Image (cartoon, rainbow, N blue to C red; front, side):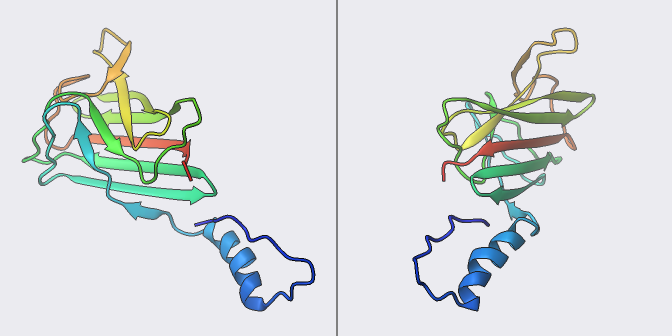
Length: 165
């Protein structure tokens, strides 16, 4: 992960170790594998429980820019809860006075395409998908919107945002 570079002092003797940390390691981190994390799936009502489903998150943080992907597949024992769904971010979003938007896909009985919204200073993101096949306005994803979820439904979320630090 990249970090804030050091402040150099006039006349400072630079060692190989310092050069490696400040230049090589920073540069290499931008080409490294993404970092895995386990997102938390929550709702504004009764909590969903993934049980035998899977959820995987991966992200790359370069400076304060975060690129993230979440892939969730529900299982035969998944319970869907009630309310609007949210997924945890790998790091808190900046309070930049604007929301960030990414892409959301639901692969259920049909394939639904929508967007991810990350509010300022947020710790999680929300998926917005069409309300129904005939009402293409978007709203929060729920257990029954845009379709009733069942085993093997996949949720794929991809987004870029500014981290708080």
